[in-house]
Image (tube, rainbow, N blue to C red; front, side):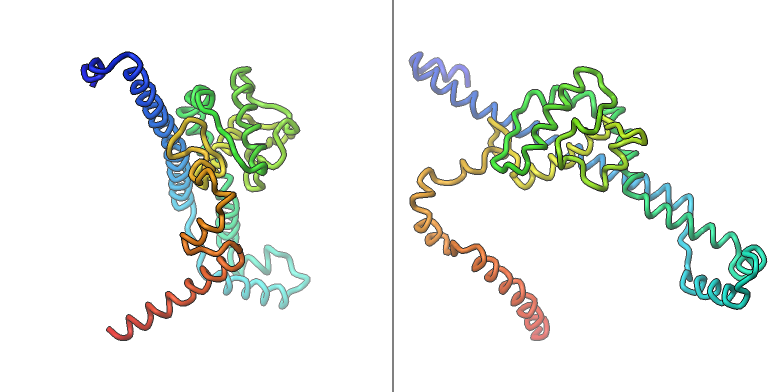
Length: 275
């Protein structure tokens, strides 16, 4: 409490206050980062649910497609020179063929439709918080593979301040647009849709933060993973691995995990049989 701080002399009081502020800052940064995975996850699940419900309302599953293909093959072989309208339609019906097309198109474009719904939700509600959110945090990584994502984050902050909606695709750092997002992020004119690109980056950022490949300066739970290691880890690596009962060879470690995964189901099966 503030009143308790007054009991101490000025130098002691200043030190305690600095410690408190440092800890409080780390808690606030963690709280901000907690929002990112939650918001992105909610947008994704909500958009998927909306798209699936829309598909279910528009079309029904076409049953017996193998039988349908069989009937088409028989009709085509029986009348190889016949007109489709006279040969195929009487055998299977134009309505069933259209239903098959609708079902295939709906399933094939599922990811793209989900991304479009996410874009609408993000642009209408969440996007206004992005610039101050990203500007207030310092994202870093110890893995050079994720440096393009960090470069892209700085780019979208600048593009947002400039009010850009589209930009040349070449400006996006290499490797920041996954294949399944390209159709959504790059328009028919070859331009980069900035809003769609922002969502694409946020999803990747969420995954990398959860894996601790990207960390945030000043955070506690999302701090630099190297800080979790003892300062003399490199010099005493063997001692620490021995204390943990772990091999230093990655292949030996993987072999041990694989063996455990193979043995556990057999152990479970034997226990179930006994009971």
